[in-house]
Image (tube, rainbow, N blue to C red; front, side):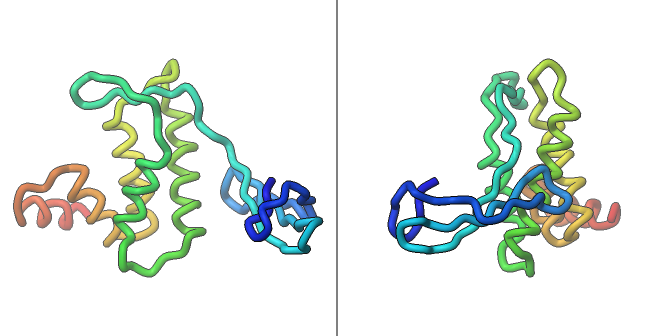
Length: 148
């Protein structure tokens, strides 16, 4: 692991501990060259999973897409990076459980994301649902709000 300050490769792990409610490990590291301390997170990565899009085409699973959607939904709302990490970790756990033979429909992913968002923040959930469900007018918003 390279030191983010001096970019040398000589770093050592000072402390390791599991991150609560996530499948991740937080490692506290120290650069042996300059003494700078920093943290890294190690987590399970979903590999070889294909997402079946609405039109039937398949594409590789991309965590970045989910993270971008979740972050946009929380824009200007009170949250922490830890909150975002926990949501995404939970989403990925649900995806792994639901995937059949290394494939999952994008609609299943969208429903998983919305369920997790609803548990954490109703305003963020509504923002995500508006884009995901492609609300056409105010009536669509009203219907979704009445379901909350």
